Length: 342
Ligand code: NAD
Ligand code: TYD
Image (cartoon, rainbow, N blue to C red; front, side, top):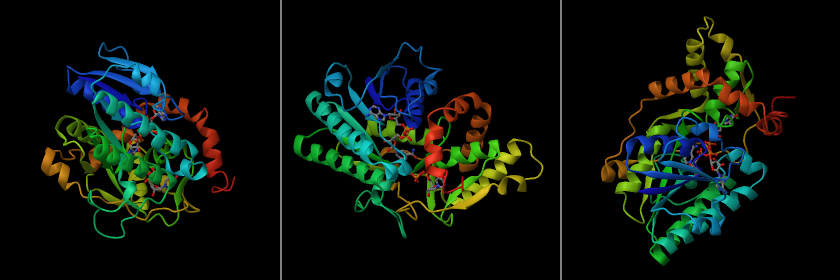
């Protein structure tokens, strides 16, 4: 099977490519990525010379480029993915997440090929209580979530109108190796290692459900191979935690891994800052459908996943030092300069 993986130089896409090349000895992967600030070919250094892999630098909005490629299925990971950036400037989110998905839908329609559209639980908005199912209403609150919800609705329309064989996955918050350090978990790990303040938005009681990235990759793969066309699958591991609890747990583990004796040294870095605008209080989905229909289940316990993640960042200092020494620091200053009183 020839797979077109879009956004494969990002966090989840690169983990998926590594997973698929090893799980499916017969698959060939074309990685199409524009290499935005979040795309990093170093994420794929260990597999870049595989005879079953090729990289193409390009935009998912480029219809002509897509017409020239040969593939049997599309996995769409490409997106602008960070809520805070969508608050600063929504325009790139509308372009890539909506117009880009539309281009891929047109391509899938023309070819008659499968499209797995990787979406997010954030399209449902904030879960005041209970769990969202695939039939819950779409009530996105951030420009990022609204752009993903829009793309999901386009996918639905192409299924209904044109019979495109597309499926949608809606996953909870991922963590693991190669995550860009603007997201909460890598930000906490790197700031703790560097002795920098750890910015906690609002009261720190916002709840997220954390899943290890490899479990998400296996879920996307299960949907590609066994999913029913036109269906939506919620993906999660039922591992809900308020941010402040997660941060304290992380700091304890980082101190252990660094062999620090006085754990309190790290908790002194916690700094409560001005809240994110429109900050969703809680995300929580029910993954019963994918578990029941496709036999998928999250396998990585949080203790295990988080320890592996912390060790990966400690062992791969060169990877993140190159990121934080470059363009990323300009964003960091805009996002946190005033909040941290600099
Ligand atoms: P990421 O920001 O790490 O990676 C996105 C990748 O897409 C980057 O490599 C970037 O260069 C590429 N890209 C951006 N615009 C492009 C364009 N126009 N054409 C081609 N490539 C482009 O994101 P991620 O965390 O890996 O997320 C991947 C997908 O999973 C996204 O669709 C996101 O909405 C979804 N998702 C993420 C999470 C999470 O916790 N990270 C949870 C659920 C769903
Ligand atoms: P994030 O990793 O940006 O994912 P998302 O907004 O898509 O859930 O943030 C996870 C949670 O952590 C969210 O409630 C916002 C919070 N947060 C902070 O408190 N401080 C930070 O510096 C960041 C980046 C996030």
